[in-house]
Amino acid sequence: MRQNARYCIFLLQQLEYSMFRRLLTTSTAKAALTDFTHLKGRKPSNQELCIVPEFLTPQLEEFLDRVSVRKLKRLARGPYSEGHFDGVIKGYKEASISSWGSSIVYDVGTTVVGSVPEQPPAIDLADESDENVGTVIRWVERSVNSLLVGGESGTGSSHLVSRWLPPHILELRTGDSGIGAHVDHKEAFGDVIAGVCLASDAVMKFVHVGDSSSHFSALLPRRCLYFQRGFVRHDFTHEIPLDPNEHVFRGRPIERTRRISLMIRDLRQVQ
Image (cartoon, rainbow, N blue to C red; front, side, top):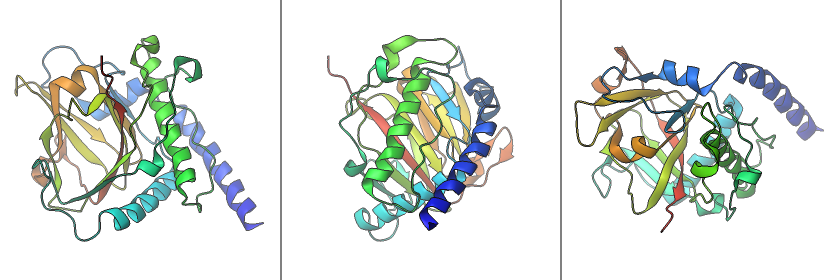
């Protein structure tokens, strides 16, 4: 009886949430959450930089935060690390979770094309099993594919991710932490870097690798889905500033507390 009551409450929360999400489009969201003042050349399309605010319900955010912390306690024990092996990250814990991955191969025939992702799965939020978490991760994967092959330009199947690598958890502590400017490893990962943001807003800065005077910033609110691909992924570094004085969006300081990014990347296709 108690489980049925929890499920009914969850469905009611989803209904209220879905009414809000219908008001969102990736175009309007990106206009409000990006600052291209100092970008030279064309702006990225929604298939090259996408931000979907309130992608997660508060309940799903709390669930993913909880299961992520549980994994990190087992796989990344001890205090926060002060320096990454490549010197990029400070004040962090991280782990790749193979048990949340899958061997699913996606194709355009199984992808719902659209500019707004499908509704969140109805899961038991008390069930912290890998299978239950995997259900949410598959939804994230499908949602990214839906936006990659849909959106305003109807790009078709050319950008579809057929295989995703296992998800990666990155937690940054409150204060004295961040991610230095870098381009994700081009030999290890494919064309799409995606993630959902938990627990705190964050400012992400992008700087062109060949011209540092060409740069832009994005505000990634907690519970959002975001991804980068194409020239944004390959030709720009991205970072979450280590200096809190640089954690500013359109002149407004953005407070960042403890934050978890749950990232998915596609498998690099070897020609």
